[in-house]
Length: 481
Image 1 (cartoon, one colour):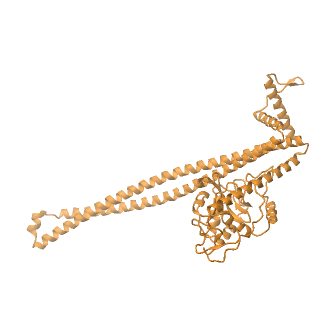
Image 2: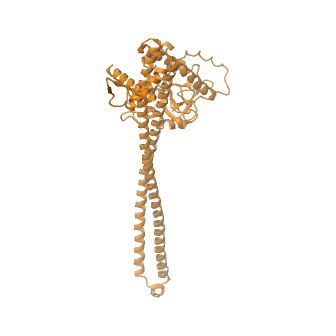
């Protein structure tokens, strides 16, 4: 409370200075003593914000609260994007480091081969030198020979020595060239490693700045929301707490509507792009008719799901809005009609495309592993030492289940199988992007838990958690490793 009175006093003082400045007058004098110093920049900013808030009507205040929520959502998306940029840069650095080590080993082997070739060449030269010391010339060889055989054997020996020297020279030239090429590749790999390291450092710095910006925006948003709630309470002659609750209810309803529309779009896109007609890949890999989609098989009523969502803190509040709010789950659809007993000579293809090889049991194992990490801290580029980032969690989960997948969310989407959202099963991956038509803009990945929920490592400051699926900005398909 003292802080509020001090802030109000500073704001009023700043407002008075602004008014005086606009009127072209001098600062007011209280008791014959002028203020010792003008207000600070923070005082002026607070005064402007308070003045702007006081000028809003109910509709304007609510519109500004919506704008704050949208601003924070964009800031959070920027943090996730920066985090994935850093994860990619880290992977590129790791690849470059491995390539540098391999190139260094190749260069060392080439150098050893060159040394061996040099030794062989030196031995060939020594052999030639010894032969030359005993060489009497062609006439002496013929004159001193006991018979024609001596002449022929001496000539053959000389040719053998010449061939050995020529071979040693050729080998020396080859291995020398190979050594030079290997050394050049090593130098290039070292340069690439240095560049990758610089890129990773820059990406990390950008990610940290983006996270700091989100923190600052969140603090500013809290302060502005407080002023807006006070304004609404004044306009409606209510209390600030009542206005907070009203705003929380309004945001929850709006979020439910947005999520319902987003889910419909996602499922419509998956249904349009798949000609499966209800086939699902079972653990054995066969495509069989599935009378009910996973969301109906997940178990539990809609009331149970809503109760679970409320217990898990899935619905946000106006004081701490979730930039990607949850929705109340829609009633489960009626089961699909039973398939025609007549055999179909042309069975529908399974809904999974790509290289998805993981079984349903492996998906459940991956989910169980991910759930065991709930409460673990988020870590930039983390693989579990000590924390995780989003793709570090999903890759760790599936690797633990015996299926290797790549390290970053963008490469995961490109390599896993694709499945429509109404056919998801536990363990499948859900990807989020800034532009859902462009996989290079993917910024986040989570692992589906069934029942409309997922496990994720959201962003810095939020630990690994299980939460209702957010449907806004999901890619056209889920992924199945």
